[in-house]
Image 1 (cartoon, one colour):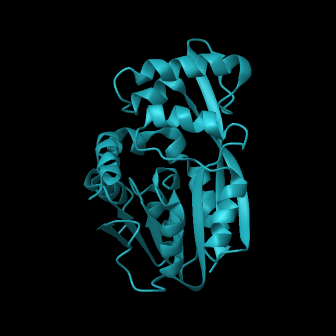
Image 2: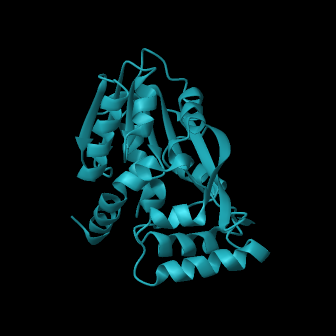
Length: 253
């Protein structure tokens, strides 16, 4: 296991509960959006790559024949199993593994997704090619991730690296579209929505390095006047609320 994978394991073992329960991550309308854009139905077998607490897997399990989730972090998979049991779902499978070398034969699934994971990957193109490989011809490949505006991306990524040391880089929509083309998925359907939250809640489910939480607060305070992070923060009484764009890209294999 390389040092970056160890960093991901450390962060998401500690974030397992707080990430799984964050309102913006659990928002049913955003989960439904992905299922609708992929055209998920009873004939499909889906795979969610870097599935985390299994929220998208469970959303698909309600409409597809079988849904599978794979993740590197055992604590996240434990949460995913609890989530499926709580929703009474039995048509699910959970696997532990590396998203860069998926342990499935070519064309094993008709829908392959990844949600809020690509910004943690050192080589997102390699991961997308793996997703394409395990997707059957005519199936759909989808990536859902934060997508800052091009002129805000550097500031956004600087903040995110402070908040979560396993963060690598969030890409603007045009760059994500280029990634799909490079992976042999030239035609995409796209949508965007905003993920909303508040700074205290964000920090409560984050585990930055010592002292970096102070720097994050300073960045948010500064962006209240110039929005240099591209997240539109505003004061709401004692809270600082924010919202940032999330891209949804779906391509047919």
